[in-house]
Length: 388
Ligand SMILES: Cc1ncc(COP(=O)(O)O)c(C=O)c1O
Image (cartoon, rainbow, N blue to C red; front, side, top):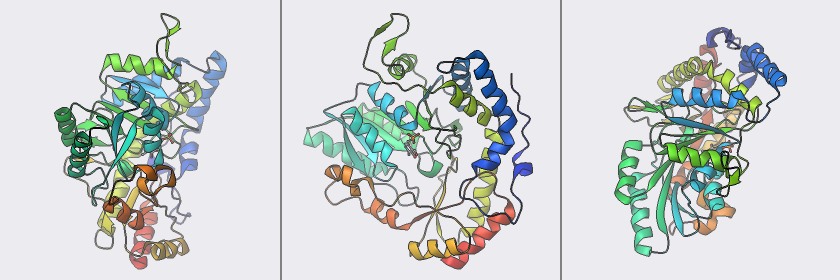
């Protein structure tokens, strides 16, 4: 068994005066290199590139970490969403409610399933789905009578879990299911439970810059429901039933290969240490920036995974340019609400989604990765204060 001999975050962090990076995968790669090489060599030795022992091993570790009964490794976060929809036979005639301020993959998955996305506005402070507007959109869909409300995909934007206690209650009232799009929030928590165990089912992404990233695409799904997990397993493998050797449903090639599982296994050995660093960084940013910019509101009892550190500013383009000139890289997630994209405009609600539209002009993400040291953070804080 490869073991983790990696140095802790503090010892791996950049020199105080090193350029500030938005994400830093190279420092992490240096930290884990020996362990990853050992794990990859093992795969070259056993030769099971698909479905090797690393798959079951990573699934067991992910489930244990999240506190969910089952975890399934899949080829991407998008496949995780698609499989979660296919697993409930969601398709034409079904309404799936999604926040209007998220990555396009959330919406693509719904359309690929054949269902209709119904956009919901978001809360201006948490940036997550607005419960009141969700309820209104469900009522409107029921009154309209053309679509059957089946599922809500709640997105944990920037790593902040949505309000699952309220969502679970609302879903039960309407006989619907909740799918957590936890692509940005693995490592987050709420009410003493981890992301992956907060609702009926959860989907995450191992895109390299996520809180746990592969060296390529990857993702995972979580549930406590054994029958649901069986359906997902067969959908992931072309709808095959391994025992009966036949296709028992329509499926996809949604597998995560052994090498990516090995990379994720290695990343998991330092995950808790990296999460501690993300919390330290977020705390310093929040203490330093609270008076200068609008921070994302973190409700009591909820812990963000700090996949991204995003603030709201007036006059964003000018602020961003000043930060670039000061050597502080920034990024914008996202430039538009879903309903403002050409591909999704046909689903735009009458009157638009005012909060999504406003956030799209104001959000600005600052450097966030576990290897930022305090001197670098203070440089970012100083530059932001000077730029706003
Ligand atoms: C909110 C959200 N959902 C879904 C995805 C899709 O994940 P992937 O790129 O692994 O398919 C992402 C990835 O960036 C995301 O941020």
